[in-house]
Length: 176
Image (cartoon, rainbow, N blue to C red; front, side, top):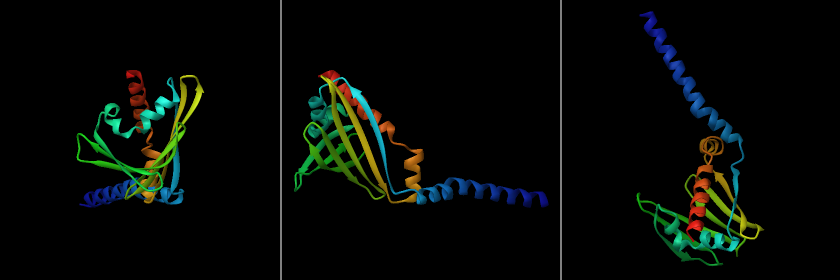
């Protein structure tokens, strides 16, 4: 009987340590981290800067090169901003974001407000030489929840999404 009690106590201690490792430590680290951080990725693309900018900002044609989209709706807002609504094919979801900065053929930024975080994506284009462009995707996140802040900053880095954007952009440019 004593062995059973000891094994139950050991089991409870192991559960407590696992909980400490998976929840409390990341929350504590996230709480001590600044709420805003930036993830940046740059690629060199063999294409004209104007063509890349056109593909990235022609929202109505997104479904042609972003295969998971059904269609895109655009709503003009005051002060030269616009709301973009992306409707997805395979799940009942709508992404909504606002274009907040737009400098023709150079940079544009989109802002997405969520319950848990706010994200600002900036796409910066720079001509390196004729038909060669440096494209930088910069994502700045402001995460409200300290546990989610830790997870997004250290564990679930969002480089995969940027890689997918670069790959689909290159595929769309190759089709032209």
